[in-house]
Length: 375
Image (cartoon, rainbow, N blue to C red; front, side, top):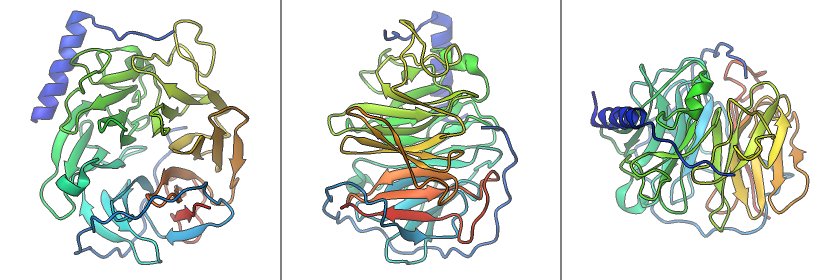
């Protein structure tokens, strides 16, 4: 058993024995399509540490650029300091480096031990806040026995497991990871098909976790020694922050409502007792809900005071004005299922499709990565 596994299991047992609880604040399982043969060359060059200047303005959704095609179920997407992107292929376990300029994606790393079954596989990616010094890249993936987080360097070497023991299933594996403004690693997990885990403060499923870059519970968490930042989630799929540090999360509902939540430390978001709004004083309500056929929101990104949420089943990109106003659907049906949305260092919005995941209608060139420049 790895050190990370022993640590997470010890934490679970300690929390269960003590009966500890956090302070609470007042998608069908269809088979996954088999990947088609592809030719992705291995990369030999290391990324530049020179970062481009950050662009201003809002993404121009009327000016799409196709950055890459033929990607095998792209899931995680994170940017290197030079503006190129790392993209996780869910089923192959490959990490690809993608650049603008219509160059061919390059395989820079393959995560060993990925078990791609149902909704599981190689999921979220995050680039260390201090990448220029450490060169660490983080990945959340489904292994043979659990979901886990590793870090690695794309120039080689075995990945280091920093956190494991997150229950896996054919559905609801969560998987989104991101470094917050505080340089801590935030992790969205799913309930692995067991809603009771979401309300168990001693369980890492159905939660947003907050970890140090080494995988330990971060200082300042609601319960000392616990990795849990918030609980009562069903399947967290997107994490994003505004410029003032306010955190938002998006997640799948069951049969009625998908959600956008403003994330508070120690907040309980109600699942499985509540889906959508109606939590009263016991649970925090979402700021936005959609019917599950309108969204199935996966990725999330924020530009200014607008949150962008990619819709899988809804096959659209939602724009949510955080300062007030009604959400608006963009790109409806144009590209099929949309999985991940992210803001590049130059201010452009990147968007991935997910039509080869076994639930979409595959179009010529799928799956693809799109870029919408800032204007």
